[in-house]
Every structure is written in structure tokens, then in C-alpha cells.
Image (cartoon, rainbow, N blue to C red):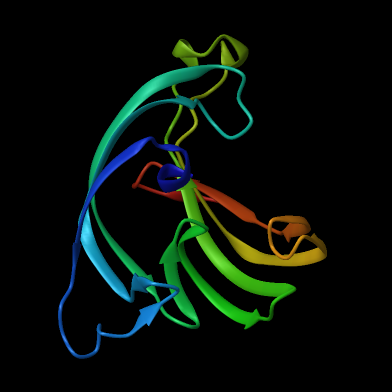
Amino acid sequence: MIVKTMLAAALALPVAGAAQAQEIAGEPLWELGVAAGVGSLPDYPAADQNHVRALALPFIRYRGDILRSDEKGLVRGRFIRTPDVEFDISLNGSFPARSDKNTARAGMPDIDWLGEVGPRLEWTVARAAGDIARVTLELPVRTVWSTDFKAVCF
């Protein structure tokens, strides 16, 4: 969620070398860079209230056939990929939320950093006009945990 929901201004520095010369769908296999962004993000997944968050992080993007780090997850393993079906296991996360700054959570404990992992099945049910329009069914199953970096709660 951090990577997906931030309005990121990224400076990508493609890595050169023989192993990285392979290109997938016109994009380099490896990219290294710095992503920085500021955005009005939900306080926690499905929250009605947002707050402005800023973050700058180094990133590595890898577009391998099985192991990937891209727009669909921080890290994911893609195990089945056909034109109509994709099955992967991915890892994602979100920022902590302070209850004193969120009216829906008034009086509740703060929410720590959240992490999530699990499988996802994406099935393209129908296509129209080639690939211009399509109907896709996505079935993710996630386990979520929280941490304050002192302990982890499931």
C-alpha cells in the first residue's frame, strides 16, 4: 500500500550489465532509484479519514519471470501466468495510525505499522476488442500483522 498509494516522484537509475540486459515488455529487468512522495493517504486500510504523509525510500524494482517487485506488491512470487490466469504470493504494508488524529478511532489504541502477505488469483473472464477492454476477477487472501518494531501481533 505504501508503494501503491503514494503519489511518487521517482528517479529511476537502470542498472547496466550483462545479467540485466534482458528486457521484459520493453522495460529493464532491474531498476534502482529513490522514490519520494507526499500524499493524502487513508489512516489505515478502509479508513474514512486521511492525513498527509511524506516518505523517501530507496527502491529496487525487479521484473523476473517468477520473482517480482512491481506495482502489484513490494515483493511477489508469480507462480502461474497465462494470458487469462495469474497466481502469485505477495507482500505489502501500510503506515501506522494515531487514534488521537482520527475521529472514527477516538478513544481506541493506535494502529502500528501493518504488513500483509498472501496469495492472489487474477482471472480474465472476458475480453473485448482485443485487450482494450476486459473483465477481470481478482481473489486475494491476506493475513495481516502489526508491529511497533518491538513486537509483532497477528
